[in-house]
Length: 121
Length: 105
Image: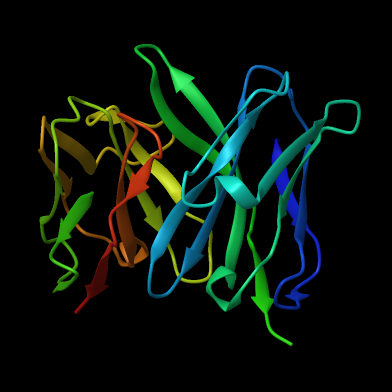
């Protein structure tokens, strides 16, 4: 059974870098779009972006200038770095597996449990 | 931009529940529905507007195209207490509706 698990600090200081890793276990790492999504009570669910297993990326323009994605296929892990964080980046961060079904119909069929990241001094 | 309605509803076990999602532009059939139970991650129910994800009970169904979409839950069950989100995947960035919270009377 494939599982995703987020890991990283739960508290980040303003202006610093938020770093998260998602470990994929129990299944194939290839041919999927490994995605980050965050959720806040006020803004709902926000698509952050994805890294394809071969390394190509796509990210939300609202965050793109502060984002870096990476992937380590040998460890079946992918990571997110978000620079210069503010309180507005406080959220539950989810990693998810993105599938492009026939007809390019995307959906996220597996999600991690989510990790709360708080930006505060 | 995705607009869901209502933002919350209360229904009885066995009821038929309908949730609407409106897109600000034509998104063809590029619309998914997710269920998020309290304290859990979202779970896909429907993709491509009407395709039921494997393992999802058949009381869930999706319909619509273009700008108007509907998620229907027939025979509402206590375990359906959750917030339901629509998501457009027509273009990037993919965006979600703000959710509809379903409570059981």
